[in-house]
Length: 151
Image (cartoon, rainbow, N blue to C red; front, side):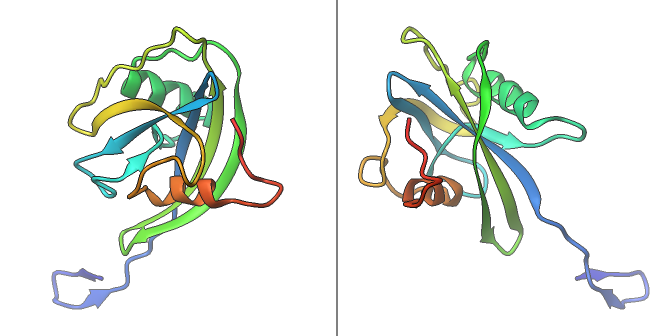
C-alpha cells in the first residue's frame, strides 16, 4: 500500500519480474556462486539477472554473464527451462534459464564481489549442489519430468 498526501492509502499494482539464469556448462559441470547483498543472500545460485527493457533472453544472458563472471559467451545461448518463484512478499519472478556451453579452459572471475562470494564449477544434481539454494535454482534441480535439465 502507498500513502497519498491526504493520508489515504491505495493499493499498489505490482507485476512479476523476469529474470534470466544462465546454465554455463563446462565439461559436464555448471557454474554456481553464493549470492550476497540482495534477496537470496547466502544462497547458491546461477549467474544471471533481470531482463532489461527491449532485451532478448539471449542478450540478457550474454550481458549478465560478462558483467558477473568476465566470460564472453561466443557460442550458442539457447533456451533451457522456465519457472515461477515467489521468493518473498516483494519478489515474484519468472525465471528463464538459458544454456551456454563453454570450452574447458574457461575461467570465471568474480567481477561483482559485492553481489557474489565467488564462482565454482559444480557437478549438477539435487544431491550435488549445496544448500541453501536460491529458489529458481532449487526448482530446476528438483525437476523430475521430461523438462529435467541435464548438462
